[in-house]
Image (tube, rainbow, N blue to C red; front, side, top):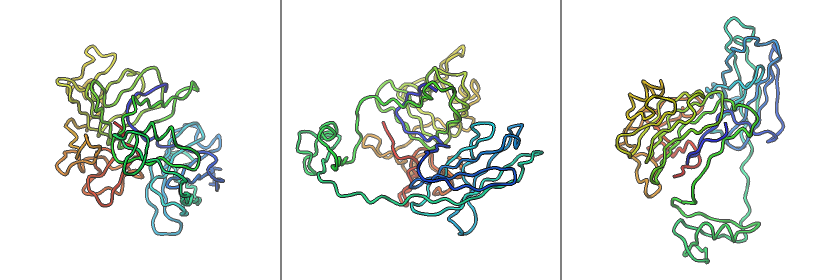
Length: 352
């Protein structure tokens, strides 16, 4: 996929970061191998099969985990197939410096892998103890001057220009406008991307004439899955210029402040899908989608938690391994759970 242009952070499930630590492996009767790569609060999972284990390539790899030796296994997000003999995935929301038992079980009706499990243990990395910076530069979204102190913070550009090795830039609270953000999820010309998962994002266009979520062309991928997101635009909530690539969108909130519009879909006789029912009928997407104002607490002030009266509270889809520890009667849409304690941010950044 060459480019997807939007101003939000997203989740790529199945991301494996090689070289994080030595892999621990075990073997199943069909020579399946399990490799685990722990980071601080996540763990990459790779399963490799022998060439003749799954000739139809229709096996599904379920993922389960627990702190080593402690109680029942919890369900993780299923692994993604990235080749005839290879599955990858990740475990999320783990504790740093902790050992986990990880088990992958195959469903392969009629095949030799059906019911086969492979299990091993891996450890997440311990938290890093950061040294005290020799100099701290305080910046604010409304900062000015060159003092860069707690009392008189400077702007972000000034702080970045002044910081050196062993020093730190400390951002005060607020929303930082640093120009247009291009999220390049390119495969750099190496063929089609694999499956891409975007779960629990909050995308607020904020500025005039911007889409909440935009898919550009050219680009190619196995499938793009979207669930439990908020796409709030000032132009279209959703704009798709690459309709020939497979999408699977549902349980998202699509909203725009532009009267009489909702989505733009290239290749249709009428590319303007002005209502959610029109989008559903024309594309088959968002059959459980929502079209209403998100109801943020204070978007202008950078607070993208949902207000208690928001219609997006508790209406999300439960996704094992991603949001199973939701608060209330169901997951909230977007990046934050509405309730204050405990605070769960599904993704690290919410950008306008």
